[in-house]
Amino acid sequence: MSEQHKQWIGGAWVNARGNKTRDVVNPATGKVMAVVPESSADDVSDAIASARTAFDSGPWGKTMHRDRGALLFKVAEAIRARAAELAEIDTRNMGKPIVEAEFDAADAAHCFEYYAGLASKVHGMTLPVPDNALSMTIREPVGVVGQIIPWNYPLLMAAWKLAPALAAGCTAVLKPAEQSPLSALVLADIFEKAGLPPGVVNVITGDGPEAGAALVADARVDKIAFTGGIDAGRIIVKSAADTMKRTTMELGGKNPNIVFADADFDAAVDGALFGAFANQGEVCSAGSRLLVEKSIYPKMCAALADKVKRVTLGDPLQRETKMGPLVSAEQRDRVMGYIEIGKKEAKLLCGGKRGSGALKDGFYVEPTIFSDVDNQMRIAREEIFGPVLVVIPFDDEDDAIRIANDTPYGLAGAAWTRDVFKGLRVLKQLRAGILWLNTYHPTYNEAPWGGYKQSGFGRELGVWGIENYLETKQININLSEAPIGWY
Ligand code: ADP
Ligand code: MG
Image (cartoon, rainbow, N blue to C red; front, side, top):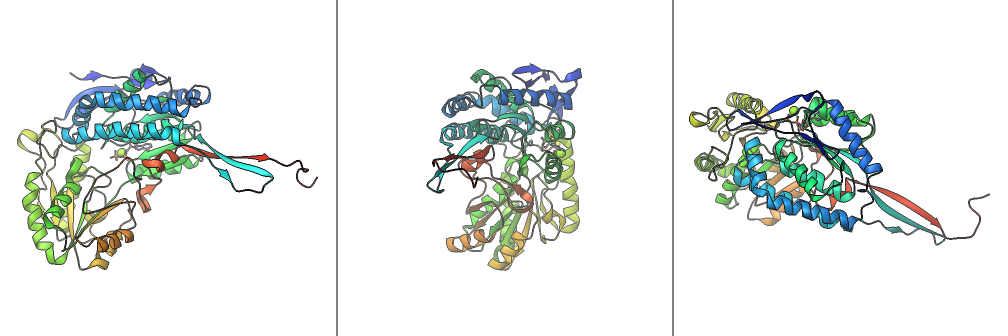
């Protein structure tokens, strides 16, 4: 009973040229749940042509800001109305617990509302130039944007990309991850019903190396916004350089979650588990390195090994499930490979096995924790992107900061302490873009999201998010009747 889908190009639902298709797998069962077009470079070219025409001669760029906002409010309302359907699709398509998928749907609706409101607040300035002139800036959409998103938050990542781009007046070609294209197609249906002009958004369902690469290489695309792994990010930045495209990159992390001895211990244990295992740990901002002050290290390890039992692995459609399967067999094998490395490097505290019994056909991996970890070990340095937490001891504040920053990444991090001054002192010294004190993971549409160092560049969300999709133009007006220049 696998549904056949089409991709959305130029306002029409179409097959891939040559009718090539790709199977979409439900990771909880390992079975095919849908079939989507396998977009070729030619399909991508069609989508770019549509987006280009919609930008250059269509009504969207000339639509008043507040009217664009009104349409985005309609989209938000439709996401709310279809939230249960969207959540179930993401859960079935990539395995996240249904409760988390429902949260994502609500968050996606709010993201559209945020940028619906912001659409009419974009404005330029006048500049303090000499009296004989008036100088001003106006803000214009950057043009056609290619948006490439990962499989860990399929609907939410589509919202983070499309909402600000549309608010800015851009047109877009969105490429969801090949593993999880289904909710983006529902979003396309929502756009169509909301009355978005044809070609303003196009959704292509191809893979990275062919469809994604074609989108990045095409000279008709003005900007690429990417969220994904660092390896793909590197390839994309290099390719985009050929046509001098603007790029924003939201890549991986190996984020430090620092627990001091004076923290609220039970809250820190909960935060450590939630930081590491929410969304199966398939989160760029996951708190995958737990740094624990030495005096409470044994107590923390014991508490983690005990409390991890609450992170129930199971069918992600069941409301009591706290962790579902990983997205694919490939991802499961990658994570299991790291677990094998970890067993040689450190001490396995709990987990470490694939799902068994009723879970054996899905791509399940138990929540896994390693203790006695040194920050130089591979399991402490490389992003695993799965349910694997490493626990590293530290001596004091300076030692915690040193270990936390000893990573090529710089996306997120947290500190747990009752001493708020100490907590802020530590967070100020972390070279990372997203930080939490005495909590982990809350993400706000109003606040800037993005990384330092090799975690990428640019900031999404908030007022920063729309900046990515705007150019700045200066216009200067002569107010004097004096001769021009020295002629
Ligand atoms: P993973 O390795 O877990 O699949 P990726 O970073 O490869 O994560 O995938 C994130 C997104 O980037 C997906 O939509 C994928 O199709 C796309 N992608 C992967 N490789 C490339 C590439 N070379 N060019 C453009 N897009 C790519
Ligand atoms: Mg890949």
